[in-house]
Length: 328
Image 1 (tube, rainbow, N blue to C red):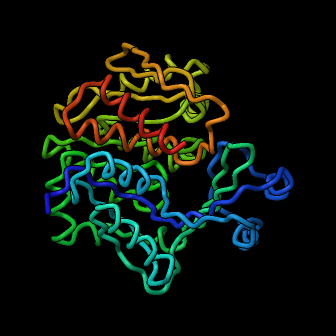
Image 2 (image 1 turned 90 degrees about the vertical axis):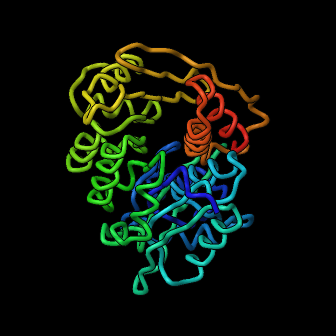
């Protein structure tokens, strides 16, 4: 098996996905397009979804989704690896089986005392809202990454990727991984992932600590605007925000950062050294939309695959957009 070119580190979750009504959104205070961590009031939501006709159980978690898409696009087994924490249970076995089937080298830490994490994917009018109960995913430890088998994969990977959600779990692991890419001259990629990651001060502080090592920063327009508001930039202009983020200095002689902000069906904004280029996306007719769940993750997966293949920025955006279309 090939040494993985792409390593993902994140929160492995089993998605429980179903179409719901506005009443469910109102009952649980859900918002379309948003992602939140579950509170006590959300506890009954998972059983309600499980009892919904047409419910689907899907291997999920933002980083894992992107890695599985990248693996699918690269075609060659073992080109990707993934680390995160699961429980010793049926949900965990489902995640292991999904990675094996997809050709992803899963290197899970297993917590025998905590159930595998789950995510309620509530779909209303083709827009999704995500409510995550991290459970075992919340227990990933840097000690697992430091073990020789995992460290070898980190040291051999050309590209390392984490969604911002992992900041809530193991900032120490992200520090180790990002520092290793500076040392090795490899690529570190990070996703803003959700407004709450940039709004909660300790999470934003970790994001800003990582930024000088981040070669590619991904996000969507809502997350970019939430960041600008949180740091007091007084601008909602996505191009301006991407430009500012691209100008945060890099460390260790790394090349300039690429900031990639998706805007749904509007052009993707890419900022490098303060210069913005826009890349059009493949517009899907409304009747062809199934739901938007996983579109952003798929974009990143396609982008990472194109990056691993040595394509240019237009090729990366095209790879990302094509993958997102397939998911939608």
